[in-house]
Image: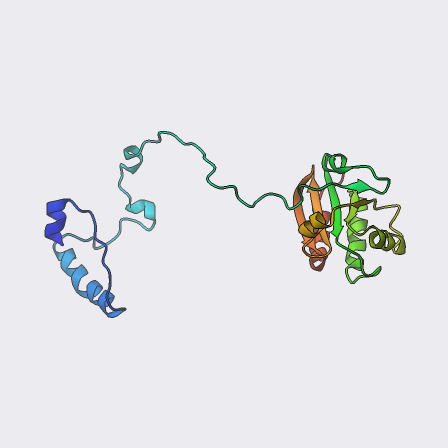
Length: 211
C-alpha cells in the first residue's frame, strides 16, 4: 500500500471487507499499526472537528466561479387549493375577492355535513370564538349546499360564517379529511388541520396577533 501511494500519488484507499466483523478487526489490529510504524497513517488527530482535519490552505485552494439555478422537475409543493371557484349563495363568483383579502382568514371545507352536530363541533365553536376575537374572517366552503346551509342554520352560524359553493372534485381534493380547516394569509395557505386536529388549530390561531 505504501509503495502504491508513493508511485501513484494516491492519497487514500477504499478497503472492502469480505467477512464482518473479523476482517475489519484484523485490518484495525494488524494493518493500521504497521502503517503507523512506517509513518503512513496518523496516530492521533489534530483536533476534535472535521474542519480541524482539513488542509490549512483549503479555503484558498477553492475559488467560487458561478452559481445558477435550473428547474429539473416541477415539484409537488404547490398549495392544495388551486383551480377552483367560490360561488356565493347569490350566484356571484367570489374567488378572487376572497383570495385577495389581506391578512388572515379561515376556510372550513367539507364535502358534506351528514350531521348537524358532529363530534368536532365543540372544537370548532372555540375556533370561531378565538377567530372573532382576533377579527379573523371565517368562511364555509362545500359542494353540498343543502347540507352545509342546514349545518349553519342548526348551529345558528349564519350571521357569522358566509357560505360559498364549490365544485365537488375541487372540494374532495382540498378536504381529503372531511372537514378540513385552512388558515390563509393573503390567499396563500399558511396552515391546515383535519377535524381530528382542530385542537391544534385553536392554539395556532390564538398565537396570531389581532388586527
